[in-house]
Length: 400
Image 1 (tube, rainbow, N blue to C red):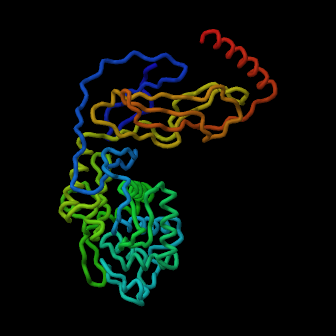
Image 2 (image 1 turned 180 degrees about the vertical axis):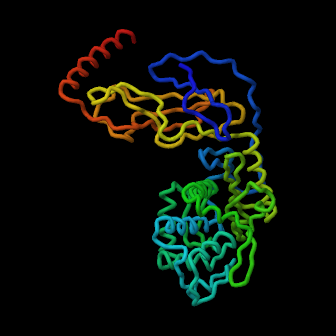
Image 3 (image 1 turned 120 degrees about the vertical axis):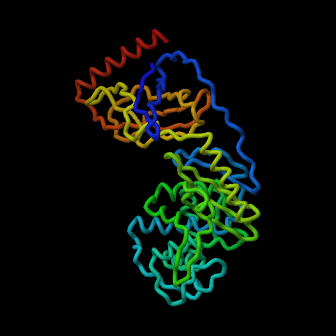
């Protein structure tokens, strides 16, 4: 069957028609396709490693050596900041909480916020210093405040890296200062940035700030794209001799947000230019569609032995897909729902899978869940359903 389901685009474009092909249904006739938008190969960059990812769908649009383990330099501070944001969000610390500055933090080399030994600095100020001016001193002070030192904080960083699926990452310190066993990958840093943006949006606004002043010293954000492209609002730069010039950038245009990671370029200008190439490519040739809202009812299959005969089945989170532009009419969704559903069924229980394809290409899968609970019916209801199910399955067998 073909119909207009609960689908809509970002940007309030016309409703997208999608076929829901149940495993028991007949294939629908194919409409005459319109000419496809031609998409060129992704740009090749003067960098060691790179990736371009959609922040909502997680689809990778371009990559090169994206899982190669490389020194991340100050891109490390994305995890340091993420853990501070997590603690703030959970209420374990407050923005006004005062952090003592140790001599070790004060003496840490490299880029600085210029905090002084013995000072009591608010958490919010240190977080600004970590994100905007890449303060190594601020990073060490926060590591000591949250975990008692750099080594236990690095252990915490690695635990969260594992939780987030960052399989090519190992942190030794919160700063990114060189160490032979301190590494990450473009893919992992894009994944971390996706969580920074989506998990704690109230803190993400900080990443677009162009300057930060502490102790009478004003320093600029080193992300040059913040001045060149109004759609860019993050995230972090990095540099060491071992790592080269690195940049994680994010931009949003017309409700589509992209994340680019470029590692191992030759200069500040190069990392900005190469990042801009990736972002321009993604926005020009792709779009992100919000196909279904969380809680959308996609089907109501028969349930046996329950206090209700039908179960509302759908998705428990928004279904977002990134696809080539002007080819949304090629999208189809196939629902594969578990046969012979039997009560009791709990709300949220997985009962099937939805596949979304663009033409023949699989662009995403999502679990189908029960959107309500169904309890067991009474004795006679279960008995009647057993008889009905027997004859239903018997009749179905005759026609298969």
